[in-house]
Image (cartoon, rainbow, N blue to C red):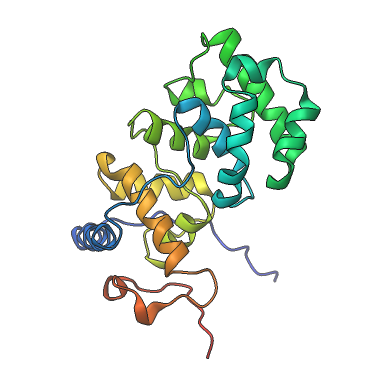
Length: 229
């Protein structure tokens, strides 16, 4: 008899202790990184939108190197809407996947100009209409540019830490977001995303995480953690 395929991971069953541990983790991370913030340099919602599109499969450091010249040449959606795609591609080439990113940036800019009155939308539904924008990008813009905790940003760091901490069993970012939303109060979502990203970059690495130096280790079950011997 052929073996049954593995079932889909179940959602975490929340208990008072589960929520209490999550609250301790959040408090510990906030103590470690009280000044955590969005790592993408921006002056307004539009610049943050473009920077977030560029950050796909690219480091924030590289994006911050590219955007000053990019925004000097194309300061707003109207300028991008009329831009030559080849010129945009040349300016963002070092971020990787530059052809797709340029296409998304120009398409999003044109829709912002033509449909949204030159303003970056303020709702999840409208942001998702923009080319190149999925829930992660929309959550980044809503939380950091508009102060609206509509959802929870899930990048590779947040997904990894959430699984190690036992906050989710999921791999799909949308399902990870669902579990985090159920676990933490809405007013904390944007800041907690920054805290998890900071910790993922400085301590809880994908390979050989520094568990012996981790200030929240006592509240972490270290699920799936593999360290060098």
